[in-house]
Image (cartoon, rainbow, N blue to C red; front, side):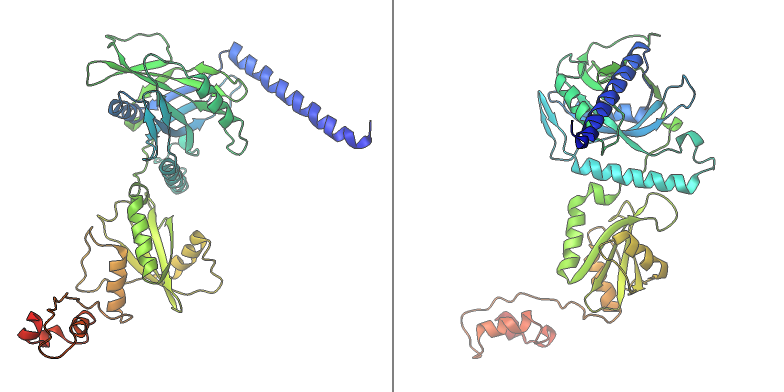
Length: 410
């Protein structure tokens, strides 16, 4: 054996030992019935009911978000709190025996909610607003999905997908929830004291929706039933409202493109501007050669609520590829810009309209001139070129108010 072969052999042996350790731990967890406690918010259950009711003939599903609170006692079990579910975007594929989630919108919403919760924890840690047990990160917990007929257990494909997630070290997840929703069950009258792994909810069509809750640990590698407990909405923290930029992505694209087309360099981010959540979605923009930035702050319900404008001087050393750091430096020296006297915001306007109004008011650009299309007859009685007459009015070379009736009629 060559000496340089020994490290590879030791590495292989170490890997095998770790594999066996995990399997033995998994077998012990199964034999002892070790599964977490599971607490569901009433909101999460109602959202599952609403989504399942919309797609009675097709499979569907949503991502789940909440907390994992560890118990440090020797025999203690962790508790998983499911606070909310998040619908996929329009790229989701729903068929009678197929469901594939689109994830662009879900990822954006999860990121938004996590950032808001992080700020909420920082802001209210140690106060009555934030109970100590909930001072933990907001986490993705897994996906629920609806299956056809009475398929109340996860499929083999579900197992392969779950194991792929758990084996991805970059994700860093030890376990997942994989609840299965089925519909069309006969309604159950009365309640039972048995600790079952499912709950039933009446639907509008006189049948029940059933949700079977399954849990899988990366060391156990099989699905285990877990008993759910539903609690009132006010027993758990409430998630922040979704911001406009995640529910109106086309609006965000239009806003950014309009400002870029007007010659502005634009960056976007969300930021804490007023000390409270939800966070604000912000823009900062600058024209080439300008000595100052314009900052725009929007609330979560924009464009129904108006934007606020600020101005900040150009600062050396800014890295425009890092919007958060740049905005933070600009925000520290920013001053409000007063709205023009004749300006009024409404939800049909865009930020570029606001930019133009502000720049006109500050003397940085001319007011837009009204262009009136003029229909020109082929008969050129005054000797002027028809194209030239059209050009005079469209480019504002002649004041339309000084034109004669004959010129306008031509």
